[in-house]
Amino acid sequence: MQLSHLDDKGNARMVNIGEKAITERMAVAQAEIRMQPQTLAMICEGTMPKGDVFACARIAGIMAAKRTFEWIPMCHPLPIESVSIDFETEEPACLRVKATLKCHWKTGIEMEALTAASVAALTVYDMCKAVDRGMVIQNICLLEKAGGKSGHYIRNQEEE
Image (cartoon, rainbow, N blue to C red):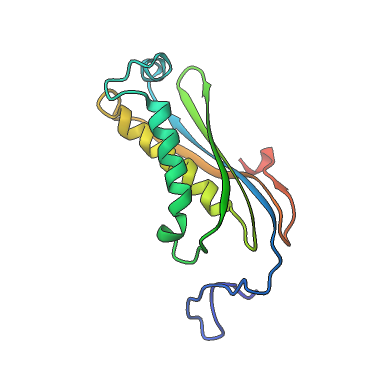
């Protein structure tokens, strides 16, 4: 199997996407933060000492998506059209971050979605660490992607 980010001599390279067609791309990624039940309650009630956790984490995730190509060495800069960061609570003590991104481009947007979800989760940790240092960020994964040569992917239960 030939790896696309290595040349014939095994040297790292950025894949040439110059001849690829522009298509609609979409990706959804998640990250979960496990915490104490009272920490989750404070986040939901808006009583965390550092302020609005959801607002800060949402902005951080959006900013991270836009800068992914600067952090992941072989990523291309993408013309991101939309970023949505959503939060779901799972009682008694889990917060799920979902990042949904869309663009029309020559390469996928999965890394940007994974980065957005990860940074939003890290921001939740930062906003809440004074209250709960034992939080755990876990289950960072791609849930769905569409567009491009490899087609549509939806994560199934067996992959978890």
